[in-house]
Image (cartoon, rainbow, N blue to C red):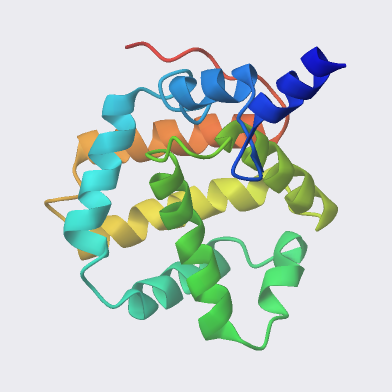
Length: 182
């Protein structure tokens, strides 16, 4: 009985459960996506672009531009849910901030990003979001960033955006992406 009591006592530190061995390994491995499916360099380049250029400006104008770019490109039944919203500002900012969240999480090692992306994929599927939406979303995002940052949003940054978007989308739809080439 003493042995079991000692083991239990050592598992708790100040009333909190000590991390298990698998948790410790998880922290070392990172978020499960960066370094495995997307190179750290790719994630960093896009993150730095975002911090230098987009974090500093008022995002509402860009967000509304993104919203209307998508509306112009794909104004059909696949987008009914999006266009029925009466709160264009909030919907536009939500659309715009989805990429911001993703870029930040790719540089966060304290999240199981692969699991979060799978959950988001199920959520989107539950809402009836189809692949055409994501294609239009990325295309509109490229146009808006190219318009606002014609020199800074260069081919290298655009490639990083493509790589990150397509890889995370692959995870969201439940498929296994190719390993990152480091």
